Image (cartoon, rainbow, N blue to C red; front, top):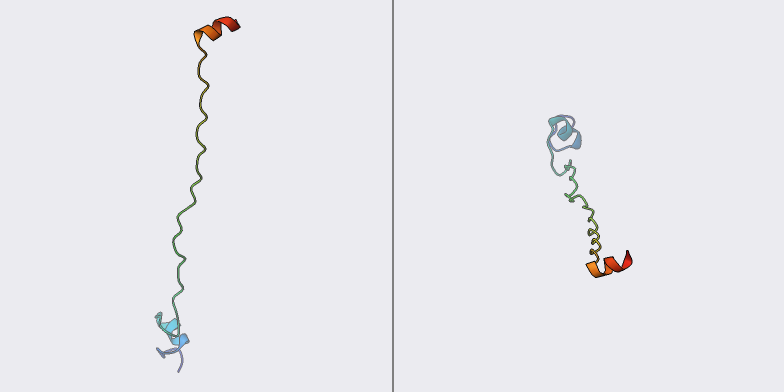
Amino acid sequence: MGKGDKKTRRGKIRLGTFGARRKRKKTAAYTPPVVKETPAPKKKAKPKKKEEAETEE
């Protein structure tokens, strides 16, 4: 009942095995990285019609 015993925690640590007395640590579940949404591009102003452009000048 010591370091060489396969059924004890200390024995499992020494032998490097896992079981009921020595559980493996669970790895965290994979979570995909959060992707930031890019804002929609601003619409460009439409060019003024020739008639409106002539009257303003």
